[in-house]
Image (tube, rainbow, N blue to C red; front, side):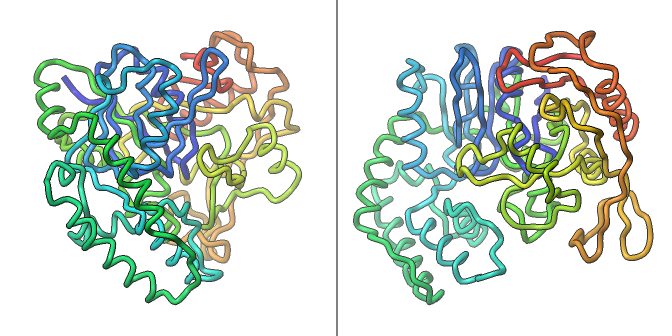
Length: 423
């Protein structure tokens, strides 16, 4: 058996949680492979909206086992609050949720370091969510980090103390005013760790490879989006992990030759949270209307998302680096009723026209070149089959499929799991 991957192809917030929820019925295991609690995977069904941060989006299905892989960073305090949010739905997460011993822990001082580092940058801020994720990955690559497996050692608090003391020294180095009461933060942290230890810790790479041998079906769930990848994103305005398909191999311990389908998720337009270049960003009433209709605010942070037309240059790039085999288009319903639609099909880059994604897409180097399309007027949210989709939307989809050379298999026409059309 093979492993299928599900990835975001833009700057995150594409709607991955919904599609994982829709697809989970076909899988035995859902596995998160990177990122931390800055993710906000939104699922909506039975009139209830759920936001998951670290827990895989298959948790609401009785059949699926949910694995948090070694590439994920976990904040015990946030994680326990997430578990408490599941209690009201009578979900047996102790039986359905298992965690890699190699996953790294976000400590209270990681969050403080994040705040101090961002404050020190002044106007050059990268737009961190201040969840401590960057500093945790820095400790990981610096070989200083604490991992889930360390919590099984009697001496884990000694290791914690050593690392926290080091962090406090680093915080003072930044010479910025960061107010905190670490004693109070640690009380909450240690209580959360004890709750976390009630779950099952596993050697996840062994678990998943044995599952593959046993014929189990596995869906690897990514967080954030491809343009936020630490290597291939719009650096330095990126996250701290590999959000692309390669990250599923390193974040789960699965060999590349075990990967089969790569589901790429994208919005019918483009959004971005925080700082960083965004060639197709709209600063007019059209962009404001997209944000309003699309409810473009971060599921976890509440931060408003910047909105703009679909950037096909960036989308082609994401399909290429991920080896996408099929596409899912989200939020087509948001574009209903606009006078016309624009799609960026090329860049004017340093005096020449290019169709590939260059090293630098800052505004002084890149001007988007657009192709215009007629827009549909129909309300898509009540449609239930591909035959009902309006002609203009089908023309839009046909154009994208031709340019991307990848089929668009799913069109989402609303937030609920039922508002999903297969093509």
